[in-house]
Image (cartoon, rainbow, N blue to C red; front, side, top):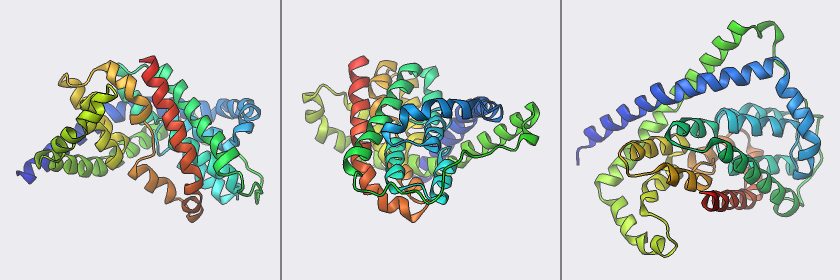
Length: 309
């Protein structure tokens, strides 16, 4: 096994994904989001939606996190979650928000997949539906015994209006986009290296042979094995790296990308769990209450994508 060759190939693929896919998409989307935020449009959207989403256990900052996850990246809601923790948002609200975020798809995977045929509008709509289902299950069932008492009133994060000019927005959003995109490269290299080693060792082929009869029984192609394994071990960015390679080689079709997006594009993977639970110890304690709702939300999204595509 050529370990160095595998590492070099993983490095090249990771840098290509970061430079030519993630950075352009993230720059444009973050500029749009920063502009809407600086002009107060996001605040008005949150104020409009708050009464509608209150029955799902989602607060103002929770709505902000929903928008950031679906339209920017999996890392974007971290600031909102940190503010919720700092301001003493109740355990029940926090668990519902956590379940929602784990069940939804992330913008840093949705947008790069659009050139490969992802139906973005349907994917976003189903993502939000799955997230709200997850939060509702957590709010009314798995987390119903959690406290609803908040330590302080929530407020939206305040933007510095003195630095909200067009040039400042573009420069700030561009810097954030580059930082987020390049920040994913080390994890992407490591994960693709692990996947490459498993593939060269025959582990993935063995796993594919073992579960192929089960997949065939439910009419699921075994082409999903490698992307699914990559997604669970290494997260959404690594999944995109593998999926884009399979698409370019004709081993994966746009229809299969759309049909599987409900299961493949979500944040309930090892990196996502580690990043979100690392914000504060309270998130670790609440994870077991959020997990059932997140799983139901992902299941709902998976079924809707399979039925539609």
